Each structure stands twice: as structure tokens, then as C-alpha cells.
Image (cartoon, rainbow, N blue to C red; front, side):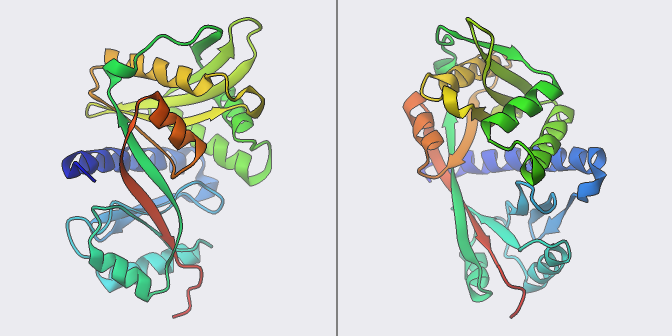
Length: 267
């Protein structure tokens, strides 16, 4: 972590966007029972079983987290059928990690955060690909296909995410083949405090390795530059293909966000 101030800025923007999005999902898809509430100096965001975020974010940075606050999070998560989870970054105080270890939490995954400079990444979209705005229904279908979430809980989670993204003001985009118009992939971007947050990027499996991800990044960088943003922010599974692509395109890793989960509520 070379720039703690930048990491704190990114985490603050991401947290704010997540809380706004969760509020819209709670209103638009009440059957999920999405809730958000403070835990120490952070926030628990519990979208519901099968959803993409059910954990405590931005916690243990400005202050220690009391055992009682963790007890309350665990109680509320388990009551909703969720395993308690905490997201930890290099900014998180060691005392929280020690307490989670004492309680039996284990790391279950991580994503790497990246930044890019809009002016450098706002390049021309590669020939053969056209980027255009998408309606909610178009984006739901495209992102589901890219994630291979065709039905069941994964499709419901995908569609709920898109509804919240639209209500939050995210710009939703679809990449199409310039020749026949078929959909190749999709992505979204949201602007806040000079940061353009890249989100929901997926490419249809059969269309990979033809520059769709680079095209979607280039177009969103153009939008970010036009909006006056000085930072493009993205995240991807640590060591995965998307992370490698982001570095290849010109992004720089800033920090790692590690998720710790407690599988059992027994002490």
C-alpha cells in the first residue's frame, strides 16, 4: 500500500456507493430484506442470501471494534441465514484481525483494487466493437449471459443488482459487434467525488479474447475524463484473468480487500 490516502479515498467512495445501492435494492426488491447498519466505524451491508455482498465493510480503520459490536453483527447475520463476514484491507487495525482469528473466521477470498488515469486510458474503442447505452432489461440480460447466471438465485441476484444500479445513476453500457450487432458484453460506471467506479463488467464466454474488456474500459474512461474525474477505480479477483487484463490495459494495483467468514455460530 504505497498511498494510504488514496486507499482511504477509494474505500470511502466505494462504501458510499454500496450503501446507496443497498438502499435502492431494499426499496425496489423488498422480498430480499436488504439492510445496512453500523458496526464499529464500518457498515454491515446484508443484501440477503444468494446476493453478492453480505459483509462488513470499511471497518476497524479509525477505531477498534468492540466484541459486543461483532456479537451483534453475528446475531443479525445468522438470523438472516448468512455466515458472518468481514472485509479487511491494509488499513484495518490488527486488533480486528486478532479478534476474528480468535472467533474462528477464515479467509474465503480476496479482490485487488486498481486505479487508472482517465486521460491515459480514454483511448479509441478497438475496431469491430460498438459501445452503446443499455436499458435495464437489456443490461439484465447481457450481464446475466456474461456471468452465465441464466436462472435461479444467480439470475435473481443479477437482476436485483441491475435495478439498484439503475436507481443509483450508474451508466449501463453494452458492447456489440459492429458488423452484425450481436451483444458481446456489458459494463457500468458510476461517478462520485472525482472517482469513476467501474463495475459489473462481463464478457460473453464465446466472445472473450477479442478486446471486449479493453473496449468497455476505454469507453468508460472517455466518460470519466469528460466528467472531470481524476481516478478510474476497479476491482477484480486477486490473481484472476480480469486482474491481469486490468494491469495489461494500464491500471495499477493499490490494495487488497480480503473477506473473512465465520462458518459456524458456535463458540
